Image (tube, rainbow, N blue to C red; front, top):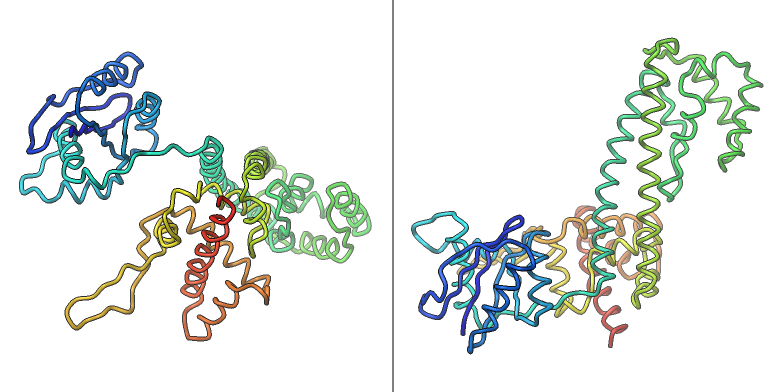
Length: 398
């Protein structure tokens, strides 16, 4: 048996080839991530008469070109969790960190754990694309939060108190009532110069045009607030209007991008067998469903519901020594933070909607009745939700 250890870095990798008992077949050397160099590596691997297994760490996106090239040529490749490799490397007394040493350690890991190595099976393209879209969606959500904070900071100077009057109730990311209103009235002076009747008519026309409720009572409250409010930036200052409208424009562009990514995710998710089942689960809507599928991916890569829970990082490893048996344990948080966040959103929706027939919601109430904190109860509910998810989606692919 021959172990090929590859220490992957950006645009190049270091390769070491070992046999059992530390016999070096080929000393560590560098290969670039180009077709010619990878083809030479592939030819070298295939020329051996013994069974060869390639071992490399998961490195985000850097290892993907090497992985895809080797798999296309039918080579056994296993991907190791970096934490596992770090713990394996920590057993030596004299520690060092170079690409050559890392390649040797990875190759040695392959020899020592030969019978536990699992051949990597690439997921379908739709899951990979969904995952990429999901991560970009999370990125733009963070940008939206920052853009929203920037806008509200400007409004504290030009229209203090207006944010509480125009809370957004829409689930659609591209529809924002505060943003639409500020685009029309960016300073209290624009409202105060009108009579009450003029502003009420103007507000109703704006609400009708934008698809919001034409509330006369809301218009009166906003008008009174504009009359009594004290802006700290003058509407006559040349930069005031520019700063407010630029904040609105940036937020609107981010909302458009979010809507575009979400529509693409929904289209891809609907092409999968499990979408209808996931969509029917309690707390899962049109927005959450594609995000949940994107983060979990192909359910067939998990051997059990426990493996899915561990992937989410909400498992609580046992702690026992001698007569002591730990009962107050924390979740590991060694897993997908995005999946934990998405799952926690589902639990919050269940608490808000209170579906009396939903087993996960009833389980959360049971845990709260036992004296568990609200957050702890939701995590317990998420644990149960993922077990149900695993069982139902597994049935789809049987």
